[in-house]
Image 1 (tube, rainbow, N blue to C red):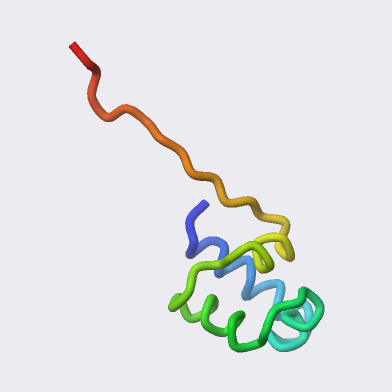
Image 2 (tube, one colour):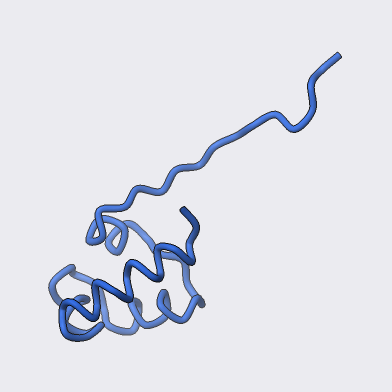
Length: 67
């Protein structure tokens, strides 16, 4: 899942809540923070991720095999 996917999930959650302001109030976020995440100018942080039931995962993978 990408940050763009999370923004889509957030947008749907805001529609369900009636507005971004309503979703923000219900999840302890400021409306301006939610708007910035929806616009793609900020990454979703813990409060937004928790409100959406999403977890940020960072991983590593080998791109070449050692010889």
